[in-house]
Image 1 (cartoon, helix red, strand yellow):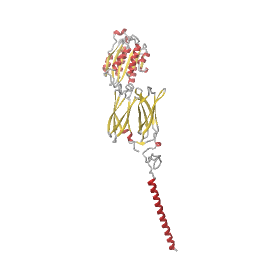
Image 2 (cartoon, rainbow, N blue to C red):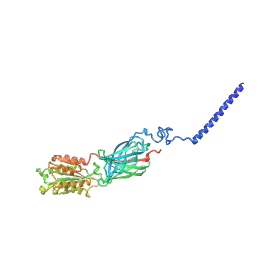
Image 3 (tube, rainbow, N blue to C red):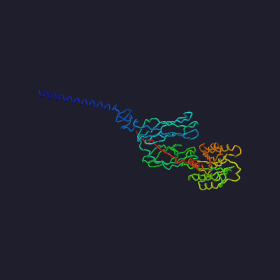
Image 4 (cartoon, one colour):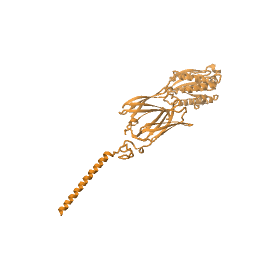
Length: 460
């Protein structure tokens, strides 16, 4: 009996073994067929949330960064600048505060408007590296002759966020040199690649700011390739003069000091004669405040105007010339030809002595009315001032005493705020000092030259 039970148990376990083997064999065959013909391993491109992903095809083992873990970039400002007739360049600054996440495809739209509404829109795609502020540039936007008063930059949520191999430290900018600001401006710069890896298709945007941080103009260029630990020189150009807008000490100034020496300038009598003596002293001090790179010319006017001193960089000579000026006795009964003074100033500022890298300025002082030439003397002067504006020459006017026509002097000035009334000679020093500040703001203008490249993003 016991032997029979043992045989039965042995037969049972043998069937179990056969069954288990059969099941395992069948399972292996089924799994093999499934894996061979039907199974797809999880990837970062299968539009499914699988594997060790944080979301569909992002995070975890995937190179792609999940958008919900990224702080959205923000637009700091946007502005347009004249590029050519009927065309404007637009630039905006976008901040990406993420330390590692950037996008190779940030979609944007510039909208240019004026008082009548939307002028035009321009859309595109740009690179946004991480952990800094980067420019977005769109050049030569056609405005059909309209001048935009507002520029709006909008950015769309990015679909693709990736790690960025190098930060802003990859590139270093040096040797900035702005030339031809009063003719055809050129900004030269040297771009250095600090990394061992070569960079390809580098976009470089230059933006010039005034001392208060206001953007004044921008330009763009490209570097096809820059080897590791190497540098290249790049050039940015503008088709129109920008010296007038660069009201900072970065740009030199050529100044014509125009002084009224008509007979009325010694009507206060005294010895030395007044107000001419105080006027000359104040003008001399003004010239002494100019910088070493500035040039100065002296023009005097009565019945006619003359260039007493052509443009010179030697302020000592200019101060000496002003100090030696006297009223010609023949002008005691002469006239005041304000317009001719502006004509002579324009001639000198357009001469070969003018520094093409400098802005052009006229500072004119008079104590009376324009009385020459005989027919419409004020109209003649206003026409001369209009021609100065055409040449981007900025005009400041100073009216001395109660007899001046300030409405007339405001028309001569480039803008009304550049016309000053000096009630007496005691206020001249402060007025000239204000003009000095207006010509050259405190502090240097800032020039941003920012490179960025697409090939620093980690490959998917």
